[in-house]
Length: 195
Image (cartoon, rainbow, N blue to C red; front, side, top):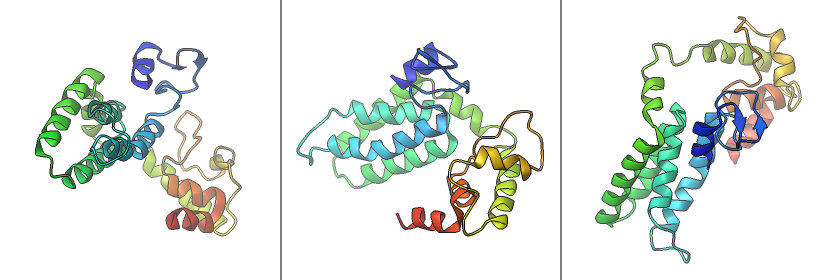
């Protein structure tokens, strides 16, 4: 549904709601959030398709999830999804299932439009703007290392630490670890690290 919604209703959340971002993927406002959801659910789907679980789903389901995650164009998401799929597939001895999964995922990735991912990997500077946002986030952390600026305040506090003007509102650090530490202090980031 997210892939179809992305291609058939740009700038809208599942066809109905206006999105502040151009790349809404179904109910997810960003390609990265969609990829994170795929990262969390792909290993479960692979396990459920392995035949070892009580409930069994067809192998095309996790193949489609991998293809959708790749089509989102999230670079880190693609790397993590491929690593997860490789790890889970490496744990199985069913070579025929592995070949079928790879074939299905490749075919579905072509259908879903994973070519966007290739373009994102070929960018001259993949960290454009993110490097500056990260440096500003580190300054936020240095200013309030223990208590942070307050959960949910990143977009409000960031302008005071911004080192450049993107010409747009920066609402997130584009790095969960930095944002957690900036908003909740180093202790919150450590809690997430433990989890």
